[in-house]
Length: 260
Length: 271
Image: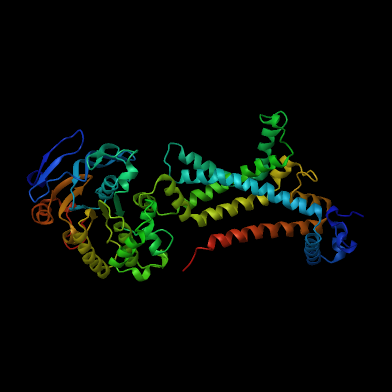
């Protein structure tokens, strides 16, 4: 009998819900219920491997989101106001990038980081750093696109008005950012949401190495492939709770100044 | 063109610091002067003005039909954009990308829409002072102008909850609290209903007379121009067609203008 590595010490009844027992146990509702109970127990029991995977997920996706914000916000602000010859081409590329499949991003980052690739000498393949790079590649166009849209949504004359009020360039951009902060926080949420939930790129460049590059999404995929649906469901609940918790905090920040 | 009859110029074209003597009184140099302005956008020349000056204490109205280039001329004179060709001078000094910020901080602009930022009325009125790093006396100045525009009771209210009239009063207070050397108004009363507009226009006229602020007013509406302006420039097709006092323009110039660029004396333009 397979024993889930994340469920050491849990009662056998909870630990043996796999594909073979699915029909016997009474179907989907029972499976989801078992998964939820298992998720709660794993969290309450502070399973070291689950904690490790969860913290790595947070670390990798958090860092990738920060990098994507550092790239995407200035680029989005620039593209929103600048006029240059190939602007439409660049904007089109950004919009295409917003729908970039994570697997494709993973493939290209793999090619770059592979032993014989241009950045192979850095030895980053199958490391958390590689996963951060791949996820930043996925999130950056999303943050850029959302930023651009939120600035373009502002009345164009507002830019002139801010300049007319005597704003220096730094003050100008600060006021623009403040004015479109709802859109920018949406950009943060969309960027984080896109990377915390992706699996293709993390699998391609991280390899799902236990105790090293395994994150929640890659662990879920692995458990599904093994037929351990209840464990996969338990991990998915943890992932969703994590995602909801972060989004909730950002939403509170976003709505905090919306006084009537 | 009326321009030549009414104005006599002694040019110092190199520095732009000319002395202009007007029949009606000004004998000091212009606060703002623009020379040989050409603005080309998307391959189309939308403004071509050889020479325009704004003198201390006057209220200069720029009137004309839609698409005449009035707002473009205002943004150039207010140093919010640079012309494709030509130069703008502020108190005799050419405005460059290096000194444009300090020049902008001597001016204030109110647009047709109030364009208030997210925040309270007080925060909006104080904004320009904060951007200039003026802390001493800022609250007193804000209070003064909130009171003058009758919006003290709205001080703590969020800007996005204001009515059109209240928002425009806030925008005017935000501009005048800066005590600008030149105030630019781009059809600031156009979006208001008739009652609000007449009330605000009357108050604003009193405020301008009291403060003696040099003002450039862009307008569609000749009744506004009559109420506020001391001098009028008629702009059409991006070029100055005529210049004079409101009376001169309405009596001598407007009847001779082509119907397409003639203003409706009681309201907007026929176009």
